Image 1 (cartoon, rainbow, N blue to C red):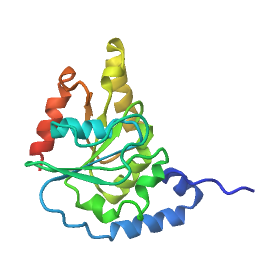
Image 2: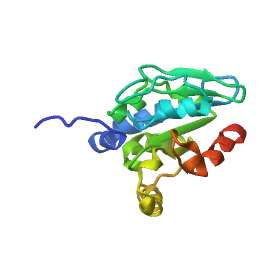
Image 3: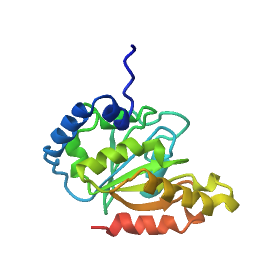
Length: 200
């Protein structure tokens, strides 16, 4: 019998519930790192537009953009109101959950955790479920919303909210449907910026 590749939090639970429980217990006992000011981290898989989102929020190009993997290490971009942390994306979602890569204390020390998706919540559901287990809130940014046909956008919005319910995600705070390239196309952009600037 071949060992199954563990490439998500759900797969870890299915493969070894005891190991998953130990991981969660260890993570729950970790103290949050103390980071001064408002700190917002953007997570998500490769090519979900994280770096473009960073540039739009900063009001200038500070992060490399392009097809494939453009961010290879965590980068901090300070603004007067907050600091944005651009976290590298990977197509293997477990990458976001390894303690060698992102310290659990970093997760806990953040003011706001943003998870970018493009087509489905399932792209990053393991990360979301892991945050649920830690009792940490997070927001979902559905980026590249301009690529959805106009007559299909309402259906797509409902699909995303239905997936959140069906996956049993507990700590989703807000969901924004935006285009980092064309910010003015959707009112959620202004709502999101106001939230990032003023949310406690």
